[in-house]
Image (tube, rainbow, N blue to C red):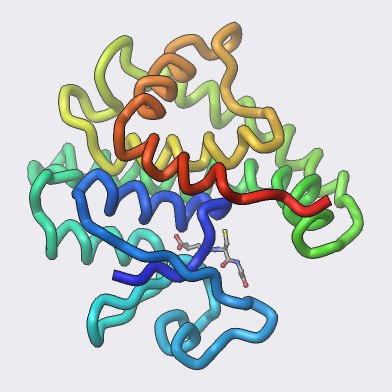
Length: 212
Ligand SMILES: N[C@@H](CCC(=O)N[C@@H](CS)C(=O)NCC(=O)O)C(=O)O
């Protein structure tokens, strides 16, 4: 499977982590978003990352790709089958992709991705908006983070990956939930980071160097 994107994106990282947890092999290709090639546009009509190609099948959007991977590679299950558990897992995916990412990516874009990768001026107004919204996100996470195990109980699921990947992105601007304010959330996140699949993706991500 080919994943289009780079691991700095929380959505791309989520797909890479999901594949790694399932033992699905992938290669990754960063598209030139300014001048994308036709194969990437065919996979991602709105030119967003991630997108993927699996043989002659293409798809974009992390949640769509993950639904595809779960059906194609059912073991180990990362999306529960039971109705309430499935609904709640998707809730965590949405909370991460929209509510927490909306706050976190404003800071990341305003302070780091804009100036370093896109050579735009620092956008402190945008970053400050995101920073102000983060404590509410982390307070919620603290209220649902388990003392041991995973967000959905004994089984590690998509819920853990989706929430942890946005925290990983926010770490780049040092606004992740810290242990002194959010002890349960921080301890749960540390458990996610200790997983072999996480380590594998983190090793690949460590090769990325932010330009000066
Ligand atoms: N809901 C989408 C969000 C994808 C997304 O917004 N990706 C960003 C990178 S983090 C992107 O491609 N931005 C470029 C653009 O919007 O043109 C998903 O889950 O994959």
